[in-house]
Image (cartoon, rainbow, N blue to C red; front, side):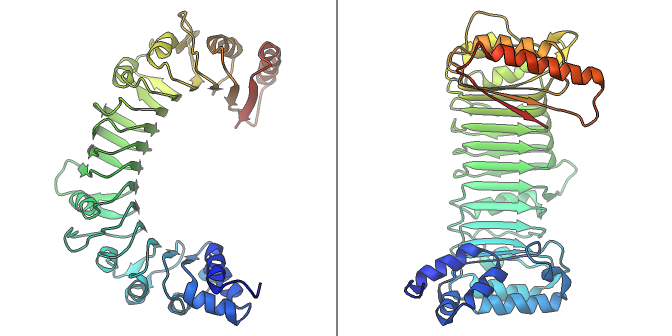
Amino acid sequence: MEHLPVEVIGNILSRLGGARDVVIASATCRKWREAWRKHLHTLSFNSNDWHVYQDITTSRLEILITQTIFQTTGLQGLSILMDDVDEFSASTVIAWLMYTRETLHRLIYNVRTTPNVNILEICGRQKMEILELSHNSITGVEPNFQRFPCLKSLSLSYVSISALDLNLLLTACPKIETLELINPEIAMSDAQVTVELSSPTLKRVYVEAISLDKFILEADSIECLHLKDCALELFELIGKGTLKHFKIDDVSVIHLDIGDTVDNLEIIDVSNFTIMWPKFYQMISKSSKLTKLHLWDVVFDDEDEIVDLETIAVCFPHLSHLALSYDLRDGVVNYGLQGSSHLENVFVLELGWTIINDLFSHWVEGLLKLCPNLRKLVIHGVVSEAKSPEECQMLANFTSSIVQLMRKYMHVDVQFDYE
């Protein structure tokens, strides 16, 4: 160990992550202490990593963090996550950021201060590539002054920001590729809550727990869009056909428009969502390159709606991964098995239920016949803790029928995933 270059020791210490572990390891010998001071490039303070962070006073914690940071030079990654800690002094936090900002490439920041610290003003015009802010407030964004020329990833969680400042912030990041918005507090100037965002470089967008009247996203290079747990009256995506992955999970939206961006879609993942199948199908029908279709716990606006798997087979010839959950209404499964077309390229099939009955195994058998080249079958199910004798018998019958069925498909790998 004594022959290891001091730069290598610096890399080892940087991979430890937690500041407490780094400090303990650096006490090994003089050479390791030198590596900590001169070659450490990543440091993390997380209130959940060590109970002492929550047991000592805030002023003492500020001193500990200050002493640790100020003994390093050239930090590239700094993470300060203080979830269950009282508010810090703004002047102390500013000192940390001023000391490290010229070399920082990654900042993960969740610190409550009095007054609020303007991260954009302190860290703008530097080398920052990844910025994750939580429980912070952003006001008065000035793209010309608070510019992030190298920023590629921006995450805002529980951040208070106006719709205008949010768009200006994207403008201040000419190389941004990834945007995450998690439960933001959008400050609006009028009664209608509208957010309009525009970026020619964005490739990945994740939006969670947001409630708006209108959300309009213009992104010419977008490849991945994920909406989760949102309530929207209108969502519109304006792009140039670069979208490859579209995921929507537990979203309430009256008008969904992803326009002409679907031609190159490869993955569609829809869960816990109410849709009008004809309208939704019309929207995605041009996605001839689709390889994965995931429709899980989907509720159809029209109770008599049936998704024709014949149509899916014809319109998505490259489909290799199909996932469907079982819903029985009035004795009719909402995914019909009519038609003569086969899902020739489907190699992975995922099927699931929320309420099991005798028809489920017949439905599984029908789908297996439609997938002649299937290699893997995954069956998902919900099993309650308390079961009646009838329910236990139903599950036993299903298990027996699946065992018998799979004897005909010995080449298929079968997995069960119950919750």
